[in-house]
Length: 488
Image 1 (tube, one colour):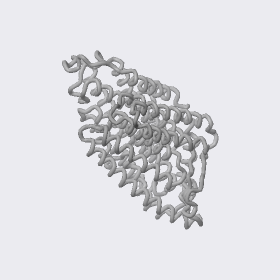
Image 2 (cartoon, helix red, strand yellow):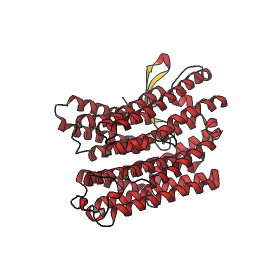
Image 3 (cartoon, helix red, strand yellow):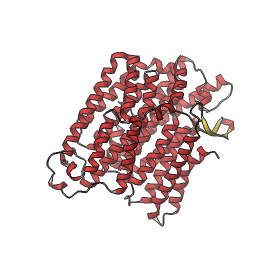
Image 4 (cartoon, helix red, strand yellow):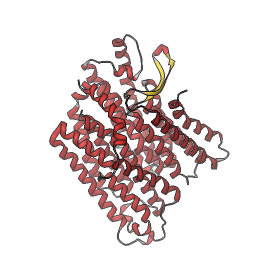
């Protein structure tokens, strides 16, 4: 098997080792950490083995699985998938460390984290639609249980809502895949689920107008885009901290990845025909998400709505159909993955220490938790798009793309940024300063297993903010390829 295949399978093997070792539950976190670290190390090797001058899929493997139906186990990475692939291994490793104090059904919890990692890695590397769909569905199962078992008071409701929304979207996606399979077979002269092969097919405009909305809906629910977003705040609020980090950090990126890889790359004419509607939904997500975040008292819910707003940047960047917009959208996905992990981990640390996330019940935390609040405010700055952080690079590039394609529409994007600055600063002022409440006088700062992931995330967020070319050069070639496809 190829290096890439082993990288995908190692977390799954780690989960199997955890479940087979259930009589020693205290060892589950060590097995999970070992599996996650090996997976991340192999992802780093994949990165250094990757030829950035080659824009095609690399380091892959193709095994005929069901030849009679044109189904293969086919995996590979390119400049679009590799950054998200590495991000997945990084965040999974940091979540395992941050979850070090999980004791309730620990083997199941850490085993599910490993299965989740395999599913997401599979989504970002699958080159066969049948395989892509299997990995896509695998991701739903562990997240459903992570929310439903280790979540908050309304965990059952939140987990069911998450599953229903995302599974319905998946069913719509498989119908669109089936349509492409049969229509593509007529054009190619043979039936295949190969993503590269179907990407090379020029489908009729009428067919694209029918299939593109189905694919857009499937990926817009995952992103999520307003008005298909209502599952996300509930899932975030009820999920444990590790679940929220992975949900916002990598699961939402599956939606953006699917839009670029599948919906836009295979159906560019269909995408162009619906551009006005897509831009409207993107602006609605940016501004609505920011306004609703402004009204929240629950710190975690505020961060959840900010994620909806930031994913609106990804959507409008892709919809701009130009170099800056698409490149900014991809960078935004990676940057947001790092930043939102800081925010949710910081929120989890505050909740563990203070036993509340309500902004109205928190004050003076800078005097009691100076390290936590320093990291938290850096996360706020990054999410606000301040220069020097990864969030600025992605948002600035998207703004350039929006201006190039839609001119003054960029002002509405800026409005979303301004509101984001307002709700972050207002929230920080209320929780960080003022008199320390009586209920908060005995709280403690970060634990070591909480500090390590946060420090790593802050360092990476600043690094990509100051040295964005390390990521921009990786994705540049693939963006050029995508633009050639979109120049219809």
